[in-house]
Amino acid sequence: MAKFSANLGLLWRELALPDAIRAAARAGFDAVECHWPYDVPADQVRAALCETGLAMLSLNTVRGDVEQGETGLAALPGRETEARSAIDQAVDYARAVGAHSVHVMAGNAEGVDARQTFLSNLAYAGDRAAPYGISILIEPLNRFDWPSYFLRTTDQASEIIANTGASNLRLMFDCYHVQITEGDLTRRLRALMPIIGHVQIAAVPDRGAPDHGEVDYRHILAVLESLGYERPIGAEYRPAGPTQPELGWLDAFRGASRLSADERGVPVKR
Ligand SMILES: O=C(O)C(=O)[C@@H](O)CO
Ligand SMILES: [Mg+2]
Image 1 (tube, rainbow, N blue to C red):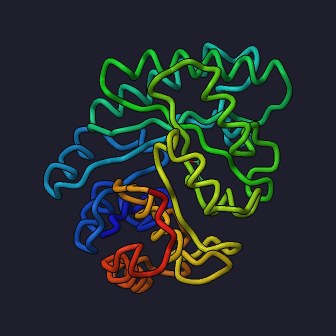
Image 2 (image 1 turned 30 degrees about the vertical axis):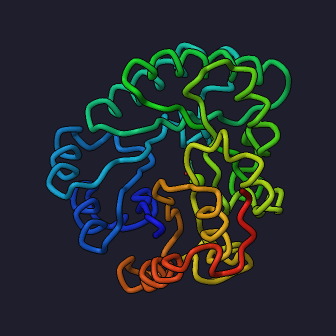
Image 3 (image 1 turned 120 degrees about the vertical axis):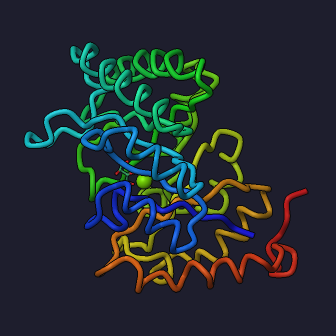
C-alpha cells in the first residue's frame, strides 16, 4: 500500500512547522518533508517528529538572496564559499532533526562553468552528508515556475549524478516538474528508478491536489508499486484553501493502491 509524505513547504503553511508536523500526523501521512526550516529551532522540530513518530524525509539548502530572485547557490561560479556554507547548514540541521536527505539547490545559471561548479559542490555535499547516512538530492525544475534554474531535465540530472562520483547522490523525481518539462513519466520512472531518491506528486498544470489534471496518479502509483518503490511519496502541491478539506485523495489513493499493480493491469517489469 502506498505511503505518503506531506510537504510542509506547501501544506499547512499557516501553521508553525512543529504544529504542521502534528497536523500531518493527525491527517494520516506517513512522513513529512519541508523546504527551508532554518527559522525554527531544530529541537522543536525534532520534538514534534518524535511525538508523532513521523520521519522528516528532506529539506533544502537556502536559495541565497531571495529578494534578488536567487534560487540556490550550488551551480553559481564564484559563490562556492556561500554554497558550501549552505550545504553545511542543511546537513547540520538534517542531523539535528534526523532528516534523511538534503536537496541541494543549484540556482539560476547555465553553461559549462555552472555545471563544473555544481559537480564540485555536490561532491562536497556528498562527502559532508555520507558519514551520517544522509542522501543528497538534486531536482530538475520546470521553466515556468523556475525560469532560469540550472537543472531542467532528468537527462541532465542523470549525467550529473553519474559524473559527481558521490555514492549518496540521488534524483528527486518531482512528477509535476518532469511532466511539464519532459512528459513520458512511466518510462522515465522505470529507466531512472536506480538513481531515484524521492518522488513527489502534484496536479499538472495547476499544482493542486494530485486528484485532477493531466496526470493519472493512480497509474503512477501502480507503476511505482510494480517497480518495488516503497518509500513515502511526497505530496508537494498548493492546496486551493485549507489543507485538510482537500485530503480526500489520500485515502482514495491508499485504497486504490491496495489493489496490486497486477490486479490493475499495469505491466509489471519482472
Ligand atoms: O518546486 C519544487 O518542486 C521544489 O521542490 C522546490 O520548492 C525546491 O525544493
Ligand atoms: Mg519538488
